Length: 288
Image 1 (cartoon, one colour):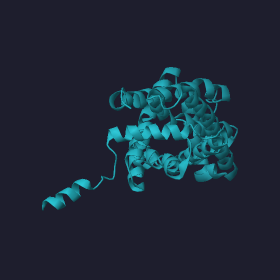
Image 2: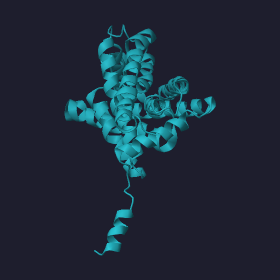
Image 3: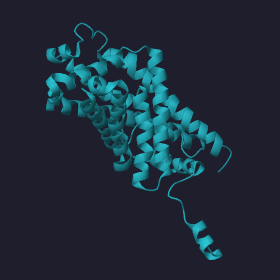
Image 4: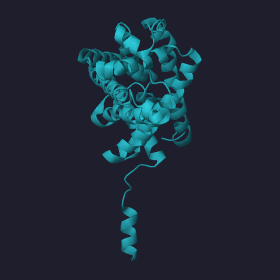
């Protein structure tokens, strides 16, 4: 290889950004997100809530009867694998997701975005994510697809919801930390790639990892638990799940206090501190 060919090879850009480059890209993303109007945040937030809901209902549908044939571990792997479609839709199709938007903290720490602008984004996006999740809950309930497998899909959905509201506050908080540490890393890896296939792969592995591990995602739970709240009123589903007289904590109050609040706080720690703040400290602190 002659000197000209060597130089040409050196001039070819790789199809991904190095970590320091991703950190710089996150600044621009944060500025862009906090420049959206309230209307844009609400529409894109509703879409994100629905997209994560699609991943949630798909995971429920695919895995409801797998455990008896393939065991617990492989069933969780399939559940987590198909769930990743939610964040793939958010990132590739375009939507505003509260948990991923914890990365805006990088732009706040660099001084490119005001704290108040980030909190404004978080508020409207979180609210819209909830609306989008509830929209899909209503649609999925109306389809009656939860009757699939002699009420098996509904039983799986009910058991998932009931398990979430029966976690202790500390456990839900800790699982929220682990979740958004991986979710924000999934977004980080997606930003590193310069092509769609690379972005999808970058999203898939961390999302699969958080779901299979059993961590808790606030927006996903905005779908899982309300679906359970509807299904608990169906005697066939309750019987199929074997949860008769075991649903005392599956209420709106139990959802918000025992799950949504601690999981949301844990998600913020995982995303805004363990990803955003630490990478800012390594690659951006003291630099402009």
